[in-house]
Each structure stands twice: as structure tokens, then as C-alpha cells.
Amino acid sequence: MTELIKLGSNYSARRNVTSEKPAMEKKVGDKFETGLFLPEGRGRQGEGGLRTQGYFKANLEVKVLITIVTVVNNGEQFLEETILSVINQTYDNIEYIIIDGGSTDATLGIIRKYEHAIDYWVSEKDSGIYDAMNKGIDLATGEWINFMNGGDCFFTEMVLNEVFFNDYSEETDILYGNHQVRYSSGRKRDVQAGNIKNLWKGSQFCHQASFTRANYHKLFKFNLCTKIVADFEFFYDAWKNQASFKAIPLTVASFEAGGVSDIKRIDSILGWWQIVDKSFIVNKYYIFVLVKELLKEIIKKKAF
Image (cartoon, rainbow, N blue to C red; front, top):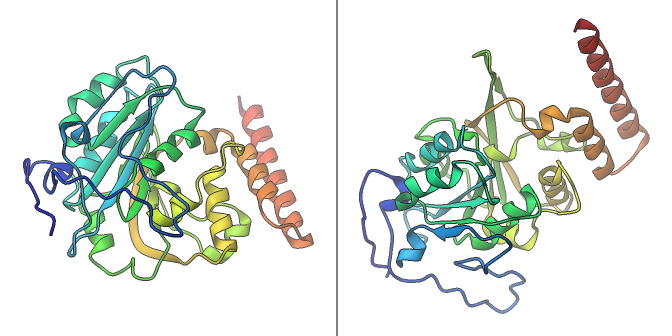
């Protein structure tokens, strides 16, 4: 039985730790590996966190371990809000990993400020957001993985308790819920997740509001050849391969409008179209959506 240590009660990542390293040996038939630390990469600026101090995490009978990964690069304006939304969760079996892409602003200072409540962080060059997210998958030792990247936040401090104390996760590969979009004007828009059967129409939920079983994500990582929509490609391929999805009737995440998929909306739609299986109905749908978006752009430009 794992002997638990409480380093403090203030932050979720410090409530249940152990000095016992998780068993990392591969089982017969396993096609994936998990590492506790990353081998040194290009432009390594540092690493730290509880793991480097000899503290680790374990799955508990009463509470499965949830791995939260934050990917960031030059995110000094919004990273602290993201970190606080994770470490202030009332669910107390969280593994928190931050992958920084070699930031040159004050991002590293913010990470170091909270490294006593972060399991592992590393700062080094990467090949883009999906490469960084794949590093997080490699490092995860939890049962589930969620990506809450710089600028994204959990909707409430109770949301992980609400998700994992309600048996939503039983016999499921991927959980997904609703999200909220925040605008610079102060307006907020609540977005309900779509029906998974409509995934051929494009993204039906955001990755921030989803949880994927770690053993599934380690087998199927993000495609580094796909730009902008590799997360959609992962979910679409999982759906095609008959992975089990379950919708959660909760708002899971909140984030600012203006992400890459918002700014490059047409590129995102073209990316979805390229990924999905083609048919007359599918092609007709995407042509209609693209014409609609192009007209919006024309009207917007004329307004200025």
C-alpha cells in the first residue's frame, strides 16, 4: 500500500504525494512508455517541481490520479491564472505538469513562484504546441489526461470533483463537457458540447473540456504534421476507431477568445475537411460553411 505524505493543504498537487517512484516498467504488450523526466532537449532553460525533490503521485482506490498538462510559451500575461485554476482545485489527487517552450519573458519566474505546487516543469525549445503536448503525455502517470494550456482555466474550483465523483468515467475512453468563451469586452458565451455523431462537421468540443484515458493517449499522440487542428484529428480518429466517448453535463473549462483556431477560422475549417472522410454530403456541407465564413470576412473588412 502506498504511504501518502501531505506537504500542505493549500494546493491540490501537495495534498497527496509519496516518496515511492511509480513503477515504470513496461508490461507485456504495452506499446507506450512513460518517463518521469524529459531527456535534455534544445535550449534547456531549467526543470523543477515536486518530482525533482523526490515526491511523486499514485492512483488511489478512492481517487484516481488526474494529470493536468499546461503548455505555454511567453505567456506571462495569463499563465498565473491558469496555474491557480489547477492548483486550487478541491480534488486532491492531481498531477500537474507544465511544458514551457523556452519563454523569453517573465513566464519562468511565474512557474518558479508556484513550483512547490507543480509536479514537474521543464523549459526548452519544442517543435510547436502539439510537440509540447506530446511531451506532457509522455510524462503523465495519471489515469486521465487533460490539457489546460496557458490562458485556459477550469470553470470552477469544484469541477474535477464533479466530474470524477459522479461515475462519468466508467467504461469510457474520452470524457468531454461544455466550455465558456470570454471576450475582451467582458462578455461571456456559454458553449454546449455537440453530439459526437456530428464530429464529421468539425470540432464538437474543445480539448480544454475533455479528459482522455492516459493509456489511450500514450498509444495515439498528436500528429506533428497536422497544424492547428491536430487535437481534432486525434478525437476524429478515436471516434472512427470506436473509442468510447461520454458527454459530461457540466461546464468544464473557460478561456479567452482569440486562440489560433479563432484567428485562423478558415484554416481550421479547411483542416477539418481534409481530415474527415469525404462524401457528397460532407463536401457540400464544408463548401457551404467556407462560403459563409468568407462572406463574414468580406463584411467585416467593409465595415472598417
